[in-house]
Image (cartoon, rainbow, N blue to C red; front, side, top):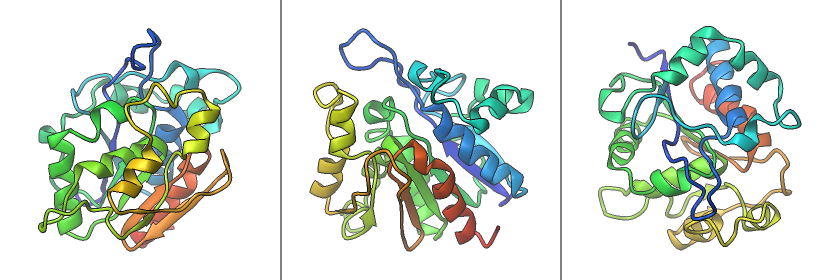
Length: 229
C-alpha cells in the first residue's frame, strides 16, 4: 500500500441499544466517499473494530434512500469484496493519505472507546493528514486526545448529526449520548446546518459533515486537502 490509500472507517456494532432493532453503518455514508476517492485515483481501504464484514443499517438499504452511489457499490464486486473483508485497525496499511470516518448509529457505541481508532487518528493528526467524518461517524473524534491530554476537538469548528435530527428520527432516548452535546462538552464549536440538508465544516485538516446528505461533499473537501480534484 502507498500514500495513495484512504482509510474508510466503519462500525462493527449491530444492535440499536435495547430496542431489539438492528443498526450499523449508513450505506450512503460509505458508498459516496468510497467513489469520491476511488474516482480520483486513490485506493479506499475499509477498516472496522472487529474486521470482517460489518453490519449495514437496514434503514439505509430501503429504496427511498438508496442513491446512485449505493446502487453502484452494490453492483461493484470489488467494493463488495472489500466490505466483506474489512481490516482491523492494527492490520490496516500504515501508509495512507487520509482517514474518513463513516457514519451510522452503530458508531455511537464502538467508535468513542476504540483504542485502535484513537491510535490511528493520533498518527494521522501527528502527521498532519486530513481527517474526515460524516454524521454519527464524527463520534470517533471523541476517541482522540492531544499530547496535552485535551480532546482533539477542543476549540475546533465541526458538525455532525444534530440534536434536532436525532429527535426527528426518534432515537434521542436510545443512543448512549447526543453527539452535538458531547462534542460541545469536549470543547468543540458545533456548527448546526439545516436539518437533513448538506452541511460541511472544514477546520484546518479536519472535515466534518452533518448527515447523509453531506457524505459526498465532505469526502470532496478531504480530496481538496489532498490537492486532488
